Length: 253
Ligand code: CAA
Image 1: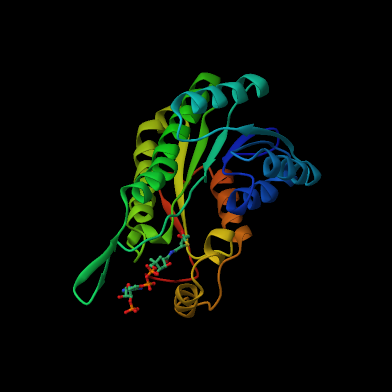
Image 2: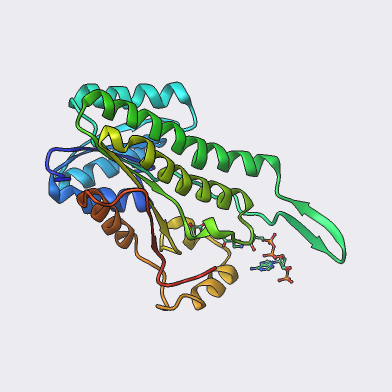
């Protein structure tokens, strides 16, 4: 895909990996539609993207809400006349041990609220945005590309029962969609980042982060732009389909 003039939607685009991706793609002069929930950070991100060479629009949308998602993608396609790609990046953590046991006594459990919030945003949000994007891509008739942001945690990670379930889910959904949507000219893939220096990772308990960082073979956290480059690679390479690309410095958890 040549990115010039294409319409690329990025969920959770106002910060972190979403914003880094938008900034990496901007010099290729696409239109970038940012979806997020905070008006102020969205406005700042939109300005940065325009300064970097793209046209941009910003959309307040809660990715867990079916009607909001369908309407937002419909309006983006109506305003721009097309929809070529979506990066399903919006995600949250609510880390907690499944069971916290001390001296044989269960002190605490991951709450249903912690479980459900992460399922709603990461898994249902990706389902809804992927479905809405694919619908508009089929209507526009230009094919397209869907990229789900998974995580190294999809293999199973202490303290992340909720998050690991969603990140395994979004990786599997990308493979499923790649098989179903290829006949519509739509490619789908996922990226599984390791520990990247975003706010999500840097606000972890410092002992936990230190333990993890020590085990990364390249001896550093990843940089957001290293994930953004992988998004760019998938978008540009029309033979990448149905795969999960791991970008984690060689870490195995
Ligand atoms: N392996 C096995 N057991 C562990 C463990 C581990 N890695 N970590 C904790 N435990 C057990 C231990 O028994 C521990 O007690 P001791 O170490 O004293 O023996 C017990 O759990 C209690 O641990 P904590 O004191 O840490 O418990 P807590 O309730 O205060 O915190 C937690 C629990 C929130 C899960 C915390 O351990 C934590 O933040 N862990 C890191 C989780 C993580 O990796 N998150 C990634 C966030 S970044 C991200 O998600 C982006 C991405 O895509 C990679």
